[in-house]
Image (cartoon, rainbow, N blue to C red; front, side):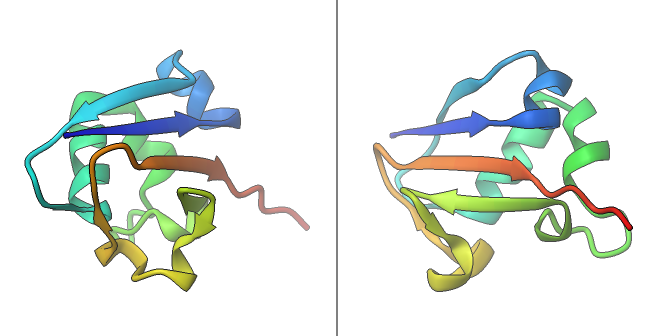
Length: 94
């Protein structure tokens, strides 16, 4: 199955791609898919994954098929063929 990942802002600059297609087994969670993406693009780990929490959510807004993952099943959302995941960096400031 194929899952499309779209990267915006700093994520796009880090990997020099706006979109990639991830080939996966029949059943994969969003958490597992993100782990695979970070394995493919190790430089993404530093900007995507919070080192203390080992979680991408503090650093990004994550959408699956246009819905924010908090209204789905979070990182445990099951992905299926044709799904689109969009990673949008969250900018913190003060």
